[in-house]
Image (cartoon, rainbow, N blue to C red; front, side, top):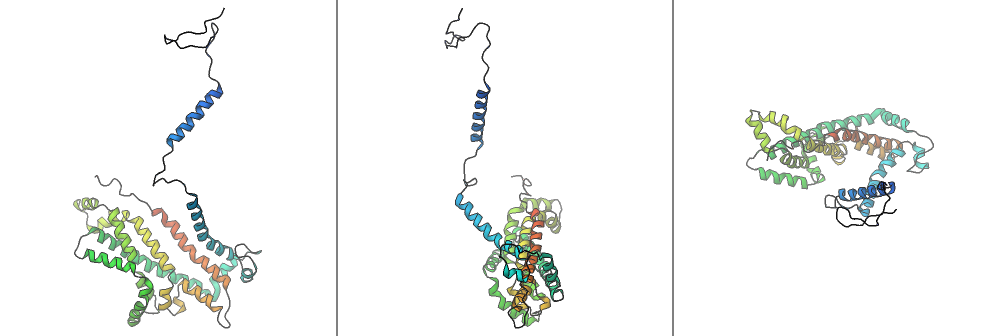
Amino acid sequence: MTTSLTSTASGSGTPTAPRTPGATPEAPTRADARTRTGTGTRTAKRRKRSPHTPLNPRPSVPLTLVTGLVLVYTLLPLAWLVVNATKDQNGLLDSFGLWFADDSHFWDNIGRTLSYDDGVFVRWLLNTLLYVVAGAGGATVLAVLGGYALATYDFPGRRAVFAVVLGAVAVPGTALAVPTFLMFSNMGLTNTPWAVIIPSLISPFGLYLMWVFAAESVPTELLEAARIDGSGELRTFFTIALPLLMPGTVTVLLFSMVATWNNYFLPLIMIKDPDWYPLTLGLNAWNAQAQTAGGEAVFDLIITGSLLTIVPIVAVFLLLQRYWQSGLAAGSVKE
């Protein structure tokens, strides 16, 4: 006995497949379930994928290639420095520059660099640290104080100060070297550490950067609320403003440190005593002695000393990068 080939479901008249009496409806197969699941997943991914906008641009192959070339251009000198710091004087001349020699003399080179000429490299390193701590540290303090004051307080001549700061940023440092030398020479400060420290205290770019950063990161309403609660200006600055200014302070500090650490021209015209040389002048003196009559060529020590010179800057950068935080004042003011 067979059933009818067509039947109506709920009065709709839709035909259904024939089935034997007592049979259960067919369950969906695993392949069907997989197909539906895969289709649903792809549909969900399409929906979740955000469209390309100026803030979310489409990946660019030419831009990626250019970035890769810039990365190679930046890291290649560092790789050359690390590789050649493991070679002795003969290995520098006999081996390929971008690969290691048969024998490694890295630790021996470090020991010879630190002890050569009665340890003068250590003296130059201490001189550089003195110039950085006093010069770059003082420049950062002055930039933070001046930038906060210019951004917070309104006083006569504020626009004139702004114009002077912008003009000072536009003037290159080499243009001021000769007038600075003549002024310090008349004061009797040449060939002393003060001839390097005092000019390093002035950082027009750092002042301008802190001025702009303080104007954007320190809400005026927050300072007014502190003053209403009875907080003095110094307490308000150290407890409220200074933590908000920390990212800009670290940025100015790093810029000032790098500029003072790599400063060459100013010490060159100000200092003649080798005992007060920074590392830049000291390594250049080692390089120049190979060109003098009877001078000893110490190119292996120059390369090793150059590698040791960049280690403190890299270490300071890694230690201070955790202070680069933004949005510290978010939610502090109700708008």
